Image 1 (cartoon, rainbow, N blue to C red):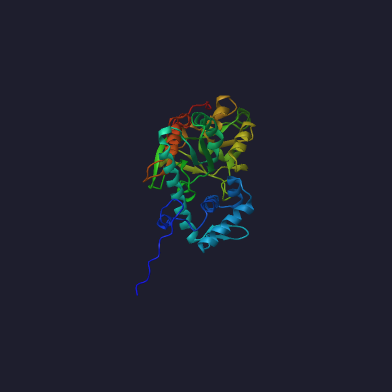
Image 2: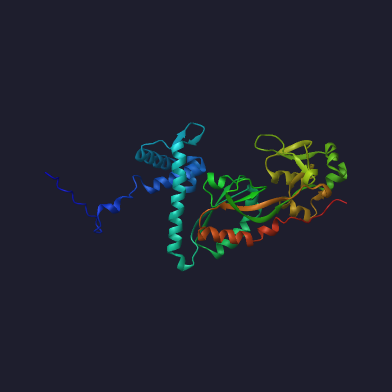
Length: 332
């Protein structure tokens, strides 16, 4: 006897349950919370970005892991890591949310209104010196656009942290990223006139060994070397550092006060040079300027919100501010 075929259950809209094939076994909101935690690497940071409590974020992750029957995050008292399953799920979530955002933009493209969130990674100093005035103009033109800024020094963070764009200084090694030139970043050696009057003016990089230098401290605790010369003639000098800091603002301020010689990005000290508070030294030995680039993931249609920000940044004063050949007072 043939079994009686089961009738498809009707949905409220009149369609059969086949329309429910793509129902998610978890709450989309929980997946978005997980993606934020994965990108931030911290429950607390993600909670702050999402304007949630850390407890609510933790509960969302617990619900998601229970719904998927898999552990997505490995948590210890000191660190938070994605499991292999978590990393794969995060990558798919980033792509899926991107597709949804693009679909929303295409649906409303006829309105010519730029909406949505653009996540931009940039070196910390760019956020201090350039972005405030540039973003002010961008948001005036596009008031429904939202921008999230993330401090980063690595192009790989565009993929690893789900960024839409990043400003990177230096040569790019990841060929999978599309780049647009923004200009150049120049390092210069500077000191206050008061210091030079007391200690004399260095004429070559070798002279720095007899001067008090203000050194930048890297994340590994070591002083960053000072690079001089161009091309094959470039060389590194270890500064005679009596004062060190991991904040270039501190170094610039100490140089202005006459505490020693500093080696800093030109845009950090441009105003002090122009105002006569600092003198530019060793101009003939300055290193080759480093290119500054705006990078994003290639191989897909760029959403309108990201395209708008790219075009605005490329056309903005950011390009001129990081020009290849800076000006400024030099020691004579």
